[in-house]
Structures are given as C-alpha cells and as structure tokens.
Length: 144
Picture 1: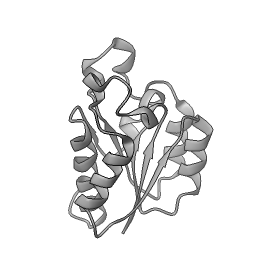
Picture 2: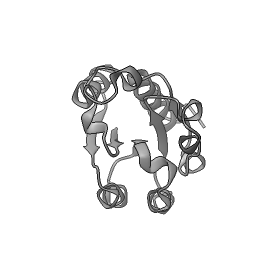
Picture 3: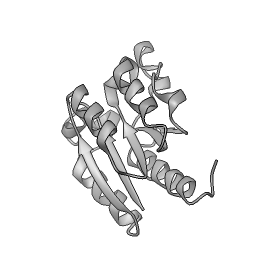
Picture 4: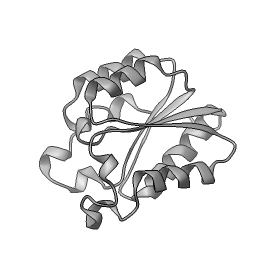
C-alpha cells in the first residue's frame, strides 16, 4: 500500500513557527512518526509552499490514497479543490494540526472538506496518525 502525505505552505517551518499552536515538532519528526506508526505502508512525503507544486503532485501521483494538510490553501484554493476532484480515482483525507473551526473566522471554511472522505484536526501530530489510520482502513475496505 502506498500513501502520499501532502503538506502545504509554511509547514516546513514547524518547530519554529508558533509552537504554542502547532507544537514543537518539525515536519520531519512528524513524518518519521507516521512512518514508524505504519511500517507496512510505503509513504511518500511532499511539502510545498507553492500552490502549483501541490496541484502538480495531486495530478501526477500514483499513490493509492492521499492525506493532505493544505494549510492556508485550505481556505481559498479552488485550484487545489479542483485538482482533488480531478482525481476521483483515489481517496483524499484532510488533516490539520490545529482545529481551524476554532480559530479566526477566515480559517473556519475549508474548500476541500467536502471533497475529502474525512477530516482530522486539532490534535497536532495525532491528527496525521488518525488520518493515516482511517485512510489505511478505507483502502483495505474496512471504512466507507
């Protein structure tokens, strides 16, 4: 089983950027935790600060499923939403370190939530673990 983890803008700054909100772990530490938690899965980790890079990755991935933290693009990127819709052949699961619905009003709207199978948010790195667990079960036919 192969799963792509996509991280959007500024997530490369984890560990330095607002640790009171996002936690003190780096993105590499979160990725290592994901890999250790699911050693049977072949993960590909991708991070970009550029909307087009994320869209290109979505359009060309050969992964069986995708966990995506689109970060700020969650709230305004119709282009990323359309890219997800163009890949109806694979399931997407949305994740966030914080809970956007409990933050500033402009963060409470997700343009990708309804085109993803499920959303996991507000539990820092555990949001990723829960999203991966759900996606793995979904791909095995254990979740709908």
